[in-house]
Image (cartoon, rainbow, N blue to C red):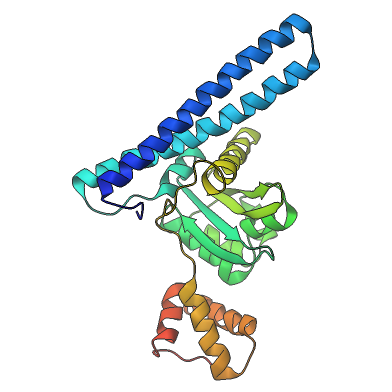
Length: 282
């Protein structure tokens, strides 16, 4: 879990952050009531607008509090019973109304730098997107908009990714960019979620809370995404292949991805074999 100290101490730290998020919800709702009263008394559109802003903020903090509380409960159970450490992304998937969700983080040039997933199917779907170079998170980041796809629309939109993700049992998805005032830091994809307007709006709200509060805001917790994958070994393997073949690193990275896809193996396993000298390309 990487929250510092014992597992019990880690759970307590998250509970404390959840409690502070709840306090912020209460403060924002108090301000909503204040400005709604002022708006009713004066008829001023300015007060209505201020009240709306505080209500939006309260909703954002409410989602954050639920995410932290969910993770704290799982962490406390893990401290008592042991077993596999909990994943923060499990609560994210639940908040989205789906069984699976994945976050992809990108740099200023939209290169993927890290990812985290709630379970096996979302992890596999995220890796397919990385290997094939097409998919919902990439489109959400590139187009700066929510992407909703399902059924035959998956295969029509993404000729490679679509059939592969359907093979994972995923028939519907929603992807939302993680947007900041300065740009986009990645995307949240929810799998198996409904394609209706309300379901998409729920994923948008979760993405907004993750971006503003969990990743960049007051509720940011170092190590919170204990299952995050920075793909360090993949890039190390690409560097080795580039040296061996005398090619550019981006081209070497594509060769590693292609080998993983052709062999139907996890990208990390192929990279590990290259790094340890068990596999050579070219």
